[in-house]
Structures are given as structure tokens and as C-alpha cells.
Image (cartoon, rainbow, N blue to C red):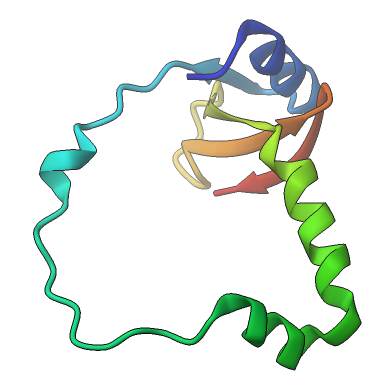
Length: 100
């Protein structure tokens, strides 16, 4: 659940949307036991292969996003078209990403 500060920042940045609290389902019940028959390639090797020297920049961007909070917003519009809920990433008091 997002803090009040993050919720207020999201509402200010997204007019017409209101922050709502969501109940998370018990994730332990959602997962079933999976038998793994092989292992994957090391992520560090994949980064070096596909991103080269840019891998460190990607890691730093990921660290910035890691301190953010996800806020669920609900549309206050009565229109039937468009999304009714969306999620935004708030980091440093600013909306840095939107999904939905």
C-alpha cells in the first residue's frame, strides 16, 4: 500500500484520478510448486552480451526506481470508455511511470 505522500503526489500529477487502497490476494496460495528441469543463463552474462557498457546505466536506473512506490488510481470519470484503474510509479514526489 502506498503512503499518503505518494498518493497525494499521484493525485496532483494525474487530475481526474483518485488514489485507492487495494487488497492484495495471498500470493502464497496463487503459486503452485514448479519442478525446474534446467537452469537459466547468468543475468550478468546476458547484460554484458546485449547491453555491453550500458549495463551499469541500466542498473543505476533500476536503483532509482527501486525506491519508488506504486499507487493505484481510479478514474473519477463516469465515461464508459478508457481504463477505470491504472497504476503509477511515484519516486521522489514525482510520477515517473504509468501502467494501464
